[in-house]
Length: 177
Length: 434
Image (cartoon, rainbow over all chains, first blue to last red; front, side, top):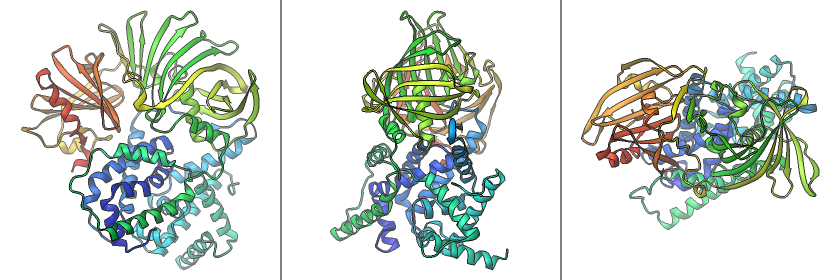
């Protein structure tokens, strides 16, 4: 994360919407893509997250966590709402991978299984994995965003790894290629 | 395993992920599965896409922004620069393949496509060859096309928006509004655009091998895309040929089981442009007055009212997706009756504010509105979306806009048409309003 005191960074991002957007838009899209299983939908929901940020961040109080923590919380809630709405609605005419022609069928199947397993991780496990492994934040920053200790975040990643491994093993796959 | 062991293991996992220790045994397997999961989630979001999204998310200048002293501004620049340095290694995909370039050629979330496609059935295909001319807006999941016979006679116009399909048949002067393509007798394959299906498959697939071929003396790439399942369980595999220079599709072959060709789509032209450059009516299907409209639920059954009743604001707040409202009071009008309508295939909510009515609905258009929303008088932008204004048969004005989770319509007497338009800016989800 950037230099400066955490509170100074918070104040800066709270009052400079453009900087906040440019710094975090991509990672919010990536996070939502995993939660929703669709990059297209992730872009739409990310736009809603930042519209909410535009309205709400100026009035946020500093409680020791970066504005990014608030963005992820809103994104997680919106993703949960979308998933809930999706379960209630009829199936959309949407394309989904189910198999691949030729030699790639197995690799596609593994990727698909892993993708689905990641999407079903508990939200805190998924967020810890996303921040540390997808975005590459050190655990100290993961802990700041999640409002937990470094050790707790490391434990979340360990549990997530075990859950993913077990999900693959249930399908008869030992380890990803 | 005891918790103490797990704590140690979690710390060793962290060290392995940081590259400070070698993972072995269970840890090695966990690192591999985590790395594989993360690799799939790492994709680039182009800087210009972020800029477009930023422009769309910035509805109006925020008032009374405090000016920063020079030192603070410099610190802010450092903060942003450092943040960008952190994020930048992840902005580019680790491998740039033909599919990624093909996807990029179809434009970003702010792009739409104008297409002309010739669709020919495969051997034994059960439909006549036709030409489709129309528009696709992949980011907003909407498309509008006119389908013509080989002789040039228009046989239907189809609008797909938010999964809802509206198909107008000029020969019978009738239209079907379906909550899903599953309701159509012709099935989902006839209600999706091949380029939209192609793009959706590109979005979901990692790299597969492409081979270079020559088509009419020009270099092209050819590759296969995984089987795609449409909402009605129709399964199609795609063999795609794209121009090596423009990377736009030239031919898409849909195959069913056993590589049997079911349709060949020749893309005669595909023009990518910014959404703001498309004609304002590019995605508007204006049904002629007097069109006989049949609305079908996703099951294919006609939509009918099952129940209607008043509910409280608290009950409305619990609905998902959240309906939209104007608050407890809008100007001098307090929120009046809140009515929930239950139809076959979906619900709608109507809120009254004096003579203003606010409808929120999803796939099923309330039949009371449907007949009145046939011909838009005017379209105009509202933020990043387009609002459609209708003059209803009963002397009312209706203004309709798509919002996340559904469609919202504000209806007002003709004399208050500007009030209906102005109300759009004040609409907000009921769930988030507190």
